[in-house]
Image (cartoon, rainbow over all chains, first blue to last red; front, side):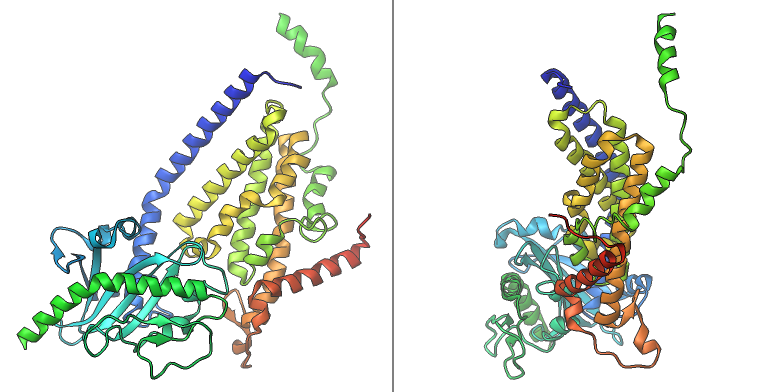
Length: 246
Length: 224
């Protein structure tokens, strides 16, 4: 049966309104739960760069976070932004701004034995992989140079290839012990190479690549370089205070 | 008065009410599991069958999600079937399917965050799964709501069964575990995972063998 154009128009209108209402109600109703999940994931990612979380209960990881981790927000010049909570910083939104205008959450992990000392500094990362955004957390030892641990997240990298940055523990393992700055204190970042199966034990700024995922690797390299260009101002200021205290 | 005279003859014509689980309705569920399986016989929905079947757990979630979406989209479209203008029926179907898919996606993000991360884009891609649209076009538009719901349920389960079968072999051979439990290590055997099973090509192999076994059993041949 042929329907009139008016009928079709009204029908689509009604359908759109119906779908819109149902979806916004669902989204609003589930928002608190989803946010809680994301918050938990953030804490787990941060703790994951400092201690081995494999086999730990989620609630224990969150407890460990609350016990060990402090956070604050810094700007591009390395100055602490007062009155901002690190969890409230929307990193993907900040990423859209020019680098110099972004603010960055930074976390510190207390020394197990001496709670006045900072053992690790944890920096969030954000960038673009092959298909979509990638993210990460990297923890530096108290020298603010040596990578203690790193983990990555991604939105839609290719499963089995680029997605290995998240799924394959061996990939993040390669970053451990690498250094970001050279002897003169210049930022070298850590660069993932093309090709897989090569040893880079003697190269402190290079890691083995992922076969079939060179472009995701490039994204990771850009992300590290980008964010540590920003973080180095903060790192310098911390190092200065460290030397004056000594 | 006038309404009574109008409705009275119509009720005489009405067929005797079918029991909820009549033979025909039961077939709607059992056929897609076997001789009319959407994956092995109709070869639909292969994309996600290759992508999510590395492990049993996400496959199970995917199967549930798809079954839910097919069943309820079928139900909705069937309820609307007499009012949908035929010129825009595809877009109406798409709207209903995406409505359910978005709901499933949101619910997963709220209650099964890990699984929703593992499935990532594939939940949203249910929208483009040929099984869903296929059933809407082929069945729901021409049948009553209850049989349509069963048909959706059956096809979702048929898809899910194959998904689970593929995932069973891929997880067992690929990482030596089932549902995350290390089977071979549990038996005290060392097992080095088969890398092929972890990549989509492994799913292609397993699926091919399943399709062959299924068709050999039912004596199904492609007709030209």
